[in-house]
Amino acid sequence: MAFGAGGGSPDEVKGGINVTPLVDVCLVLLIIFMVVTPMLQSGVDVVLPAGAHAEKKPGKEGDLIISIKTDGTVFVGQDWIPDRDLGRYLKAEHQKDSSRAVMLKADKRINFGKVRAVMKAANEAEFTQVAILTENQQAGSQIAKGRT
Image 1 (cartoon, rainbow, N blue to C red):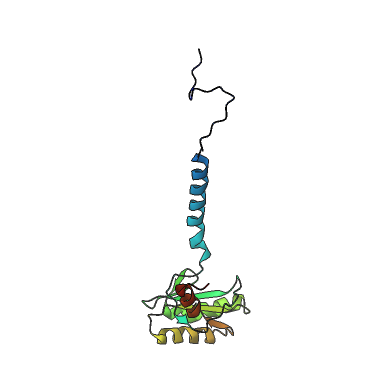
Image 2: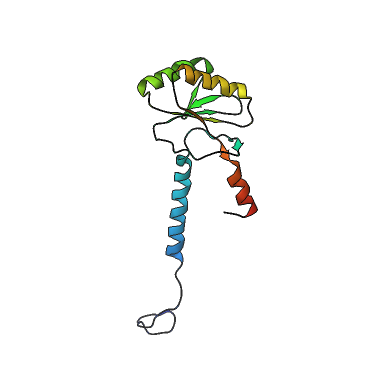
């Protein structure tokens, strides 16, 4: 004896939508984006200052990223470097690859004297290309006004 659900013949097309595969795919994509997004950022997270004339500078993968947090701690990549060791560390990095550029990410709430000290250490380590990263102030205001 066979039991059937729906009361129709087995050859009849069912009109219901099965959303389970769609939900599964969406959850997998959400998890992938949650895992990959933090990896896209290089260096330590800081609040960059806004600049009216900020330009997008193409960075190379081997660039040295120096981040200065609000409390004045200095990170090279993801590694915390004490102030007393910064000059020696930067000289060692310059000896590894002298063609690298330095990208300086400083929190906008810190005193500029700390930024100046880090730039001086990079100069003493003989880096010739030092860039200070900023947010584009004009792009943010255009998005806020609804212009894209």
